[in-house]
Image (cartoon, rainbow, N blue to C red; front, side, top):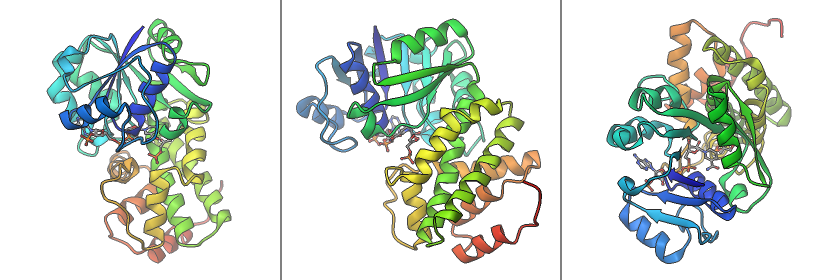
Amino acid sequence: MSVAVLGAGAFGTALAIALARHDADVTLWARDTDVVRLMSRDRQNERRLPGVRFPARLAITSEIGTVASEIVLLTVPMQQLAGFLTFHSATLNGRILVSCAKGIDLATQRGATDIISAACPEAQIAVLTGPSFAADIARGLPTALTLACRDDRTGAALQEALSTPVLRLYLSSDVRGAELGGALKNVIAIAAGVVVGAGLGDSARAALMTRGFAEMNRLAIRLGAQSETLAGLSGFGDLVLTCTSDGSRNFRYGRALGAAEKFDPQTTVEGAATAKAVSILAKTLDLEMPIAAMVAALVDRKISISDAMSQLLSRPLRKE
Ligand SMILES: NC(=O)C1=CN([C@@H]2O[C@H](COP(=O)(O)OP(=O)(O)OC[C@H]3O[C@@H](n4cnc5c(N)ncnc54)[C@H](OP(=O)(O)O)[C@@H]3O)[C@@H](O)[C@H]2O)C=CC1
Ligand SMILES: O=C(CO)COP(=O)(O)O
């Protein structure tokens, strides 16, 4: 079995390592020839996933045209996905494309699978998502993810091809629910970080996670997702992980906002743009998404932390 992973960030590198360790022929593609040269020389991704050696079956390339695998994992960040596909759709059309990005495109307010199917209409599309830090996958720690695909046979084949003894994939046909769970939990993770950074305590964080989960469901179900999917690994599972762990960049970013501390602007924080996309969607769909609106306003520095909190706390009392 051969798999290509396009995008040599932390997640793409970790998946490539995990699959190559488990006897797959894996090609990891990066756009930058210097990065490819260094990874080939050092047999590790020093910048994005330092300290984890590449298995022998992991090949590295900057030549996307030489990538022959039928199964292709797309691991570039969400806000770069549409631009990436503009360049590479001819190469990728007709293959099995597995979306691994967690976000909503700000320019179009569309999820990854809609962006992929618009660029590559002949491709078969799946979503791989769930609670999984790149560092954990790369270390071979046990991880469980959702593999969502509308076509049952392709989904089952991908589940088989991409599972390893420590990377367990659960199959779903709810592509919309899987991609929205992964996208929306990042927004709530930023808000959870804000609560912790502002010193509001763990009880407030638990309340925010719970109300955030209700908000995730509200939007996702309106967009055609199934509530069972949101309650699974791709929604609730990933929400728990990213709202409670320092390993999450979204959580750390929110915590820095809440504590008025600096944060490295080069870090990938998918929830920031996604919160803005969600706020636009909420207006269009006439949905109440107060936590996403608060995160969007905080990201753009349109509101102070204390004003954000008092706005949330002064909302009318209502039934749960
Ligand atoms: N890290 C994690 O633990 C997890 C991440 N994810 C998801 O995976 C996605 C990627 O995240 P992650 O790997 O962590 O991100 P990183 O910040 O580690 O790396 C981003 C990578 O994307 C590459 N990239 C950016 N734009 C383009 C482009 N236009 N064409 C080609 N490559 C590009 C960058 O290349 P360059 O260095 O040249 O800029 C870099 O290698 C996100 O949606 C994230 O939510 C999902 C689960 C876990
Ligand atoms: O999605 C992730 C874990 O499942 C990674 O979260 P961060 O992007 O917040 O680091």
